[in-house]
Image (cartoon, rainbow, N blue to C red; front, side, top):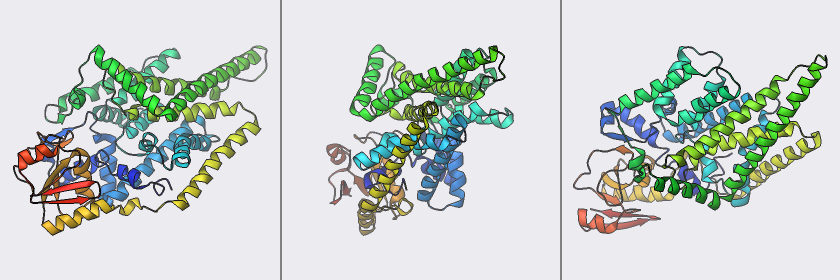
Length: 462
């Protein structure tokens, strides 16, 4: 139902260039894995667990569209599973509804889920890395598989350090338990492996992403971008403030109840300290540390950019869902029932909204813009062209004609930031002009023989 309620704009984001990164890497590996030597990967290469899971699904499914949707469904089921780990069997459905509530609210108030909440269900936005951190925290058996997963995840995405090892270490210190030396060693091994792989794999550094240098100016700029994101997206700010409030209330209630149970025990009564109360405290502390780290560390290191809420959106949603569920446990049955009815009302309104919107099937997504471009490619017998990063991969994979589209920057001086970095050809059959400097196009490739407009996309044909 979530994917059926996506309009054309949001459905396009489901197949944007970032999401299609795994499909591009998969095709490169199956065609000739030596071609990866010409690639530049993002700082998080998503080789594990994202690419491993994606390629496993892709082996059995020919079309990448259902794979992307099924991948997101699997992630959603994993979110449900880990919420159950935090709040228990009796409350996990309430927690999951709360997790989805911000997105449901956006559906009913603004006609669609905001991209900040939307990416929580999509691949490559650090989602599987985050879920792997939750799995590692709750793992009972720490054998070979556990070690390999931690090394591979730290190798693929260094945000695993913020999602797992630092919060886990802080949690151990607060509980006055021994430090997780095994996990620290495994994470360090993964980071060293990533450093070694940089000798033969090219990575896009954070400084190359936006000319960032570690300085007070960049830290202030990052802080400004974070404040602007929260100011321009008030629903995020209110969600953050509400999560902080429920976390403090939840910690206070669980601590008070534990102290009360201790006093009963000291009076000789047979009641023991509830392990559920301790688990509630630990869950809130762990998730709060995650949220603080993923919000503040990118700012402190000066690489937080405008719109980079993907760094902390999952910890925020988990903290909101878990802390609110824990607080509801201490409320009266009437208040619990009222909250449940309110949430179910939002879901019912979503069903009403679903009946009013056009039906765009993500499993056979073929927008009118791509259809128009396809017709132009067939008519002109075009085979190779160039476009900016956000158009190249999307048009090439969604188009049904056999075309190769190379990514470039706005001034056509080099290839796109992420992907194959082999040099641009001297001649091309067409150029998608969106986000490109048309003066630079004419200066480098000459005047086009023909021009066609396909909705928002202009095409120069040579």
